Amino acid sequence: MKIATYNIFKGGFGAYDNNVAWPPKRLNLIKQAVKQIDADFIGLVDSFDWDKGPKDQEIAKYFDYPFAKTIKLEDQWRGEDCTDTNLTVLTKMEADFESVSAGGRNFLKSQIELSGIILNIFTVYLDYRKDSTRLIQIKKLVEKITNDQSSVIMGDLNTFGAYSLPKEISALFGFGTRILGISKILPEFIRKIYESSVPKILTSHTFSTANIQHKPTAPTNILTKGILKPFIEIDYIFHNPGIKSSNFQIYTGGVFEKASDHYPISCEIGLI
Image (cartoon, rainbow, N blue to C red; front, top):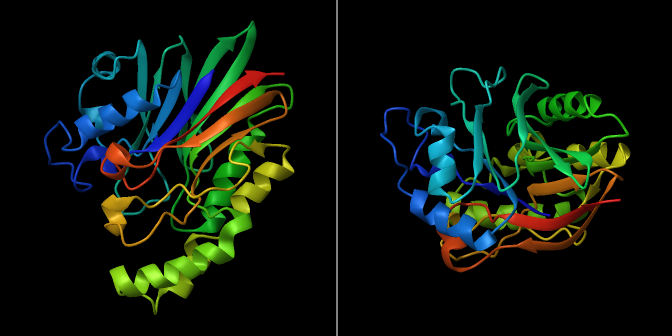
């Protein structure tokens, strides 16, 4: 079974603006990207305003998938200055969907029967502001998963991969100086936003990453304009010991440079 996760950056819209009418301007690019990935199951992260657009059946039909589901994060941490967003999944396999609240934010649980065994796939989008909030969210989510359940946690964890953190910090300083002009605030930005505690929590609970080489998953040319190569590992597929993964892939070039600021990732999974 091939699974994938893809942060689609503001749902394909140009901004987090509730007054902009459907469809998003990058929707066709996202459709092209999803078609090229050709996963049996794909979680679309940050599908902003998709709950106000077409119904799930219409979304599924547009992407040529039999089933789709969108939920709202209903983020209790976001405050007045942040916009709530959504999670969407597309699947070729029939699934039972559930909005699971953990640490003040909803995650999308998809339950699929695979070879007679129930597989749980959690599509997640963790808080981008504080590591302490992300830790609450991931700990609460892991508490809901028992050791005998075959489970996947995937999505945008908004945290750097621990193994490549020094390289990413160095790249961020160069990026801030050349692109954003915010190099003076980057140390505080890195300390508060991109600590690497979440992967450590998951591995301590016997979850393994499919991206064993810790390859970067962002940013794309839509953000860097081609000046920098991707340097941040921020999107993940984790699975517990009941699952084996193989053929991990990051999709770059072509439409993937224009559809979002993140690259999609995928892998093959099987039950042990």
